[in-house]
Image 1 (cartoon, helix red, strand yellow):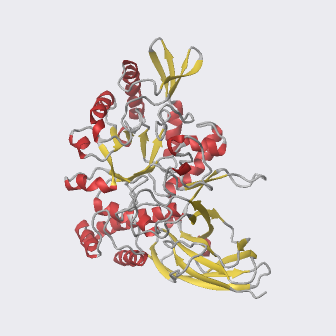
Image 2: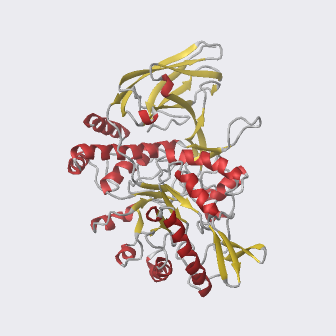
Image 3: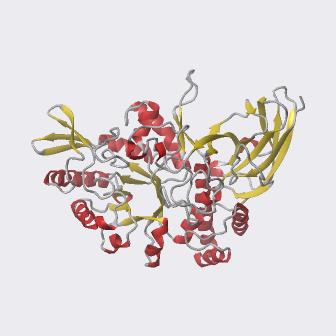
Length: 552
């Protein structure tokens, strides 16, 4: 059998589908010395049979700074909801490249006629990579050591460095999902072993804020239903009075802060989509663990007001003692509409009386909420952000969720080109917004949490969400021999999102050198305006970053 493969190096913004056609070769690129840089080696077996135990080896003076991962496909049946636009790569159901599997460079299987991709990362840590031009060699060989192909990639490391990341960036971590996937009770010692691995991936994706479940977050839950308990605050209820134990919360915050988390967002004190009811709150009552609040209790009932009147001052004293009061934010209810503003103001009044310098934040897009002082830091849906920005309000976080799938707004759906995911970083810089929020870091449930899913088999949340919306990492478990650890591995979309963060920080570094007016003028000249006007081209994006790197 003749040994023949096709291969080429391609950008990290390329998605190498099994039936890929017309891949654009990328032979060289540049990076700043402290960036994390990715490119791919795409391979296609053109022999008459399957090639097994294929090996990929790196060479060159950057070899010690390189790591390899295999790109694995996942199924997707719902590519977008509602109407799409013409900036998708695929809109039909199928298999989409997404999972980045850890790989030692050996044992690759290449089926006949199908493309596979190896994801290659260059990273130098805090010290950065050595400045200069570096040729990376890539040798592909078969199980007998016979060479199947040799490729090279020229990576220039520029002397500039990224600005410090002082943005507030958060993707909601779902602790019931960690329990379901790994069998560890939230906040037990076994949980923290797994949580540490999730946090590594979380912080490496550019996140600086962490959703912190004071009580089980009342999110994505069918009215009247419930999710697995994830509650950090211990409560004891006796005779209409309450005692609180913050030791688990203290451990959680210290653990996260030691691993790079700068800000904490406390979970919602009222139910989603209007704030009409209470979250699930468990307490020790008469010696038994009992649910004392939930769907059966109104948000502004006397009982819950009394509870919050005791709890919130003690929470505030706790974070103040930790010196974290101005780095902690409090959620009321997620995504209230204009019709909920009266109820929202009532919830706001209950909470604001007790939280000191902590600020409220919520995903909401009606400017009236901010205009009436209902929320301190709005989290604004990208298509509605211009109203805030035109009023000079930049102390906001941007977010997208399930939508938008049209209008050329940034999103991370599986069927979208990676540039549409990555462009968010340039837009964040341009907007002047404080940061970004997304609801799905590891949401491994169906919509409304009706049942749990296998994220490797169901990327649509049981049919509720476009593929790629509800999670950006995949769970991994130790093998039967105990090799490896339970934790999470990133998706391709996760790494591309971080590339967007690096774009933003590169622009911040350029601003420090040349001024914001210079950078804004450059963006306008390049055709970037607002949150949905930009050159829709990976080639443009690469050339633009090359330009920024040269200026730095």
